[in-house]
Image (cartoon, rainbow, N blue to C red; front, side):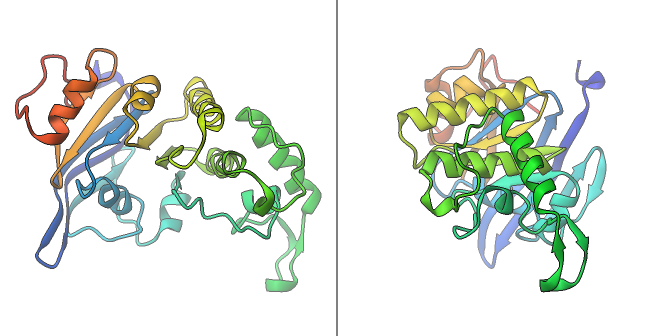
Length: 260
């Protein structure tokens, strides 16, 4: 079946060393265009290092990153964005003093004329497109003209996801998307992620929340001590299987594991 599924992201031997510290070792990863994947593991397992090295935040020590089968070498996050890869970080990277449309178009402002700080912005067009993006992702913000500083954590997360969905034509990566949210706001964000699945938008979720992982993704990639310990099918694996891989109790391959 794999030969007819489109691979959108692949890493081969992806490795990152910080001096003598081996943060990521020989990570082979493959993601298909029709799935959502979770990356899990203990603190320091290599999850964030993996994400930083595929999105251009850091430069890899060795290995390859391929997008649509073509090797890429992102020097900065903007390079990844130009390839349709968007990341929603825990700190959200929102400008508190700006409103929703301004944050969604931050760094990608639509202008009539480009004159640096004196550029003439297409404010109405950006506001209209922002409203469309919110509607497409099922996000409801009562007043998009207010600064995001006055919004709840859930609303802010929704704005960040909407921005990613608007520009992430290839892949969206979410780092602990509900870590700081309450129950209702967590449910809201999870529903948005399910909506992205329905729209066919591939998503990678980095999370410690196993309940959330099993509810939202197709496969679970487990990192341990800088390596990919294994990949499990979320439909057939259990929480105990994941914990066993994270802790190293079970060094073997689960019978229902789907290696990539």
